[in-house]
Length: 145
Image (cartoon, rainbow, N blue to C red; front, side, top):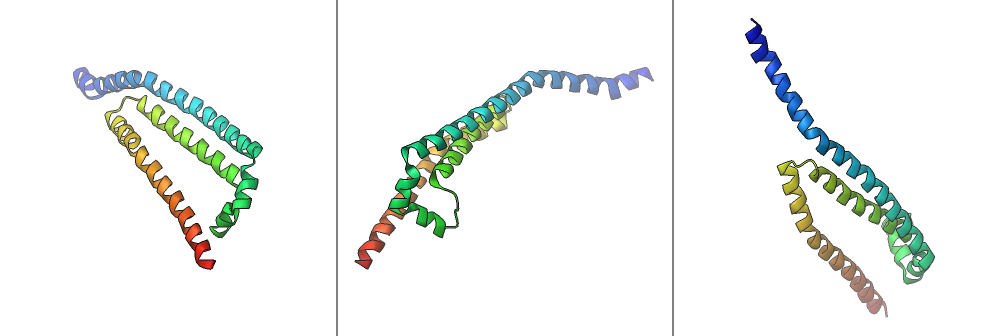
């Protein structure tokens, strides 16, 4: 009977304990990276927003017409705040990917690699979007003239 309890109950619990103990340092590293990444992301977002306010991005975007375009799109915040929030989320996303890759799980590492390979496509799409917006404003003004 004791042999049954050892094979049915005790051995799986011991294996579970060894797996948890093997994963614990990686989990602690992930939590540490996430906390540090969150603090760095908050700091980068704050610095970006304040720096853009000092430079005068809000006044420039008001003169150029970006504020009006944002208002037409339903965005009620100023461009400095938007840029600060965007910087925060970009840094925080990289911190999350770094923290998850610290777990050394193969599927998460493959996801991180594929996501990092996709980033140049996102920047290209953003550049095309901005260029299209500027071109459409130019063409719209040319038609009015």
